[in-house]
Length: 196
Ligand code: UP5
Ligand code: MG
Image (cartoon, rainbow, N blue to C red):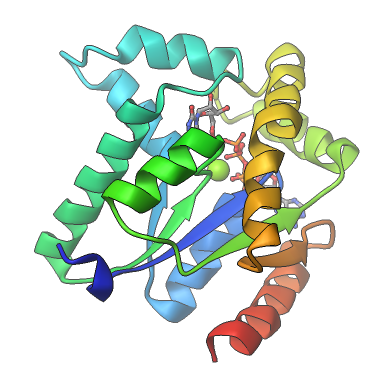
């Protein structure tokens, strides 16, 4: 596909900030296709015959970042498949890039992002949400030990990505602490200002 026809918004924020929750609303109202890097990795992990299954499993459990080649290839394939199946070329890329090398690689080989939507949330709030979800989610990383590691990776490795885009004035920052509908209302107002 031609990068010029494609619109990509990166949706970033700490573990449990509410990226997936807000993306669902944006899909409903603005006809984006939602691609969660974490969901794509979990699906690849469970795909019979995948050569990356064990690697992905270990990374997710430890809150570590899967080597970018794997994630970028999954995202690019999902974008191609979506475009050929539906024609939709507007994407929310959720939970990616979470390391500088991924950001550079994606914008070089796939396409530049239009902007970064950043959900800002205190750790204590995110922890409460993840522990609550962990009661029923079945996610291998919704436990105290994995959550601690995910937070550390976020602060050390993923926040620099947000800071990088912020320095380029490409970040729309939204307070993710209030209830979901309130966070969404702020998202809509701020996106409208930037995208029109
Ligand atoms: N909730 C949501 N919003 C709320 C609100 N405003 N008020 C109250 N409750 C709210 O929400 C989390 C929970 O909080 C839910 O129960 C929700 O109802 C509630 P959700 O919308 O799921 O938050 P989200 O930010 O999407 O949290 P998630 O757990 O998905 O974030 P992570 O970034 O940790 O997970 P992800 O799936 O993106 O990545 C998992 C792992 O995959 C990473 O740790 C890493 O190991 C690997 N990965 C890579 O290696 N590379 C990548 O590029 C991406 C992932
Ligand atoms: Mg998510």
